[in-house]
Length: 155
Image (cartoon, rainbow, N blue to C red; front, side, top):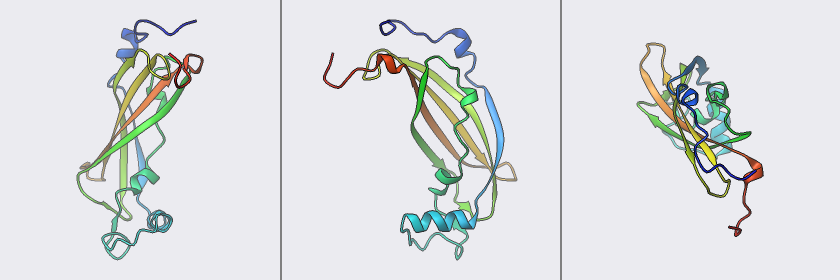
């Protein structure tokens, strides 16, 4: 079977846009901050127990797994291709954060190294106990059919 020549995204798939999951409770723990700072050899004085501020990359450590249940299954394989974070304020050591996920977009790509692929974006909002927005992340995943993958240099 060759690569599709038109979109496989249906109206039912598009109806999933806006679907949400969560909230999931997270905690910015001092031991996680210490561990990841040690791994990265980060001695930036802005972060740590002395200041009570966690480095922004701690979100990559504590963020919940990709909410795959939000994503319609269109093709057999999928990978997370990127995550982009935006922060409204610093995360504080010891605080509780609540993450809510929302399927933000579905689009497809005809051709490319993986043949036909479907790209989905999940927006995650991180709110503090008062409900104030602290940060967001936009995760992009790609679904593809490994049987359609082209070797580099072949056309």
